[in-house]
Every structure is written in structure tokens, then in C-alpha cells.
Length: 353
Image (tube, rainbow, N blue to C red; front, side, top):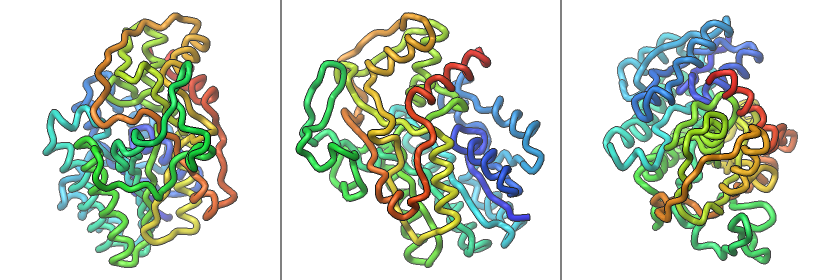
């Protein structure tokens, strides 16, 4: 049986990947030690999803390994060796706010952890495909230098700009910009995955995600925008809007649609390829627009406050241009839009609270 290694397997994208690959007949080895609980507290723990996977996915094996532990990672890869056909690396410290509180842990998890996985991949199963979940934060705050215009409920880019119709493409520089420490650690990992592909002639794909979301997200204040927003709508918890008049715009991609991108890449892999991966014009909203939708779906009035202090390095407006991926894999397209995503999140949160 073909084996897939999935890191962060109990998280949003990891668990979606496990379920997806299970249906494709893979034996899946999940690596997850619930560091999300350490980062963000008990409410963000992914242990519930780990248990669910073990109970419902018969071909799933769970290993509670720290990806920074080179010996354990290499031992795991050596155990399955050439049977490993795919590695999907989603494990990370994902918050640019949290990174500043412990830069060493942030960097070692995001950069060193990725390096240990790449080396194990190169030494044990070099014919496999390595997929890395990167982030749009590798572009730093360069998107904030775009010609942005303030509208009633959102910031928008000038209609004459090349990014207006489809969003930001992969030509944007990742250099000489304010990334946040999280962004810097993800840049290091992003470039490492590219380099292992190009230097060692390995199949590696880098997906620079917008807001990755879906019903399996354990949202918390520091990470998981839509999931946490809807959780506040359901529970009445106070939500804080950080700066930009609440008009900052994000594109949102359902976890299934992202994992389906991974699947298409796996079937026709390339070397050191980089893709922007988000909802683009298909699925996006401002903070204020998202609040209105959450109120409509939940039937509750949101309890929120506003602070002028925006998060350091945060984007005012960001939409992902996914046309490069679609040009390589024209059979892929979105399955879910913003309303689908928020409705599913609402249903999932109601079942858990």
C-alpha cells in the first residue's frame, strides 16, 4: 500500500488531507503532538480531531512526534522508506502575533522542523512528492504598498491595477519588507523546500496560502480568522478588531479545495514549484463584511470592539491569484465559496460547543 506522511495531521489542513488520501487508498502516517494547544491554550487543542481520525479512518496511524526531533523523524521515514509516495507538511507555528513571544520556538518549528523533514525525505524516499503549506505572509507587508482605496465596508485595490481582477500573483517580491517573525520563519522554510527541489532534483510544491479555513478549524484569537469569528458569534464571546477600520480584506479557501490542489500536484508533480493558494475573487471578505455574514447565519448580534492598533506586518488587502496553478492543472477549480464555508463552520461549532 502507498504511504503518505502528513504532518500537523490533527489540524485543519492536515486532517482534511488525511480524510482525502484515505479515500484514495493511501495508508496515512500522521505526525502531530498538539503543539497548537501549547501555542494558543486548551480551546485551540486539536486532540478532538486526532481522536476522531483514529476512530474513523481505518488506514490511519498516529505518531506524536516533534518535527524538530531529527532522529525520530528520520527513524519514521526509514521505517516506511520507499513505500512513502507523498509527504504533506502542514505542521507549523501559524501566528505572527505569537511568534514575537518566543522567536526561537517559532523559528525552530517552522524552519528547522521543515529542514528535518526535507532531509528525511531526501535520504529515504527521494522519488516521493513533498508538498509544503506556506503562507502569503512570505510577501511581508508589501501588499500594503499597493494603490488601495477605502470603500464603505472594505479596502479595495485601484481598478486600473494589474492585481484588481484576479489578485496578487507569484511575481510579488518577498524581499525587503516587514514579514513579522512568523513570516520570516516561513520564508526560510518556503525557500528550503524550493531549494531541495531545485538543488537535489526532487518533486516539491510550495503553496502560499491565503486564509485557510473550514469546519475542522480549532479557531482562536491569534489564529483562525473565520472559525474564531463564528465561534464568537455563536457563544457571545467578545471579538476584537485590530485596526484598518475593520475593512481589511482576506481571501478564504476551504480546506478541501486546498487539499484538492495538493492532489492534482501529486499526480503531475513539478520541481520546486511555487503557487499562491487562496479564495481570490471567488471567496473573500472584509472583517466588517464577515461580521455581517456571521450575524445572519447565527441569528446573533456580534459582540465586538475595535482597537486602532493593527497587528504588526498585517495585510490591509490580500487576494490570491490562483491562475498559475490553474494553468498547470486546468481540471482543478473551487468547490466551496464564502457562504458555504461559513455555514459549514457554524454547523461544526454548534456541534462542539
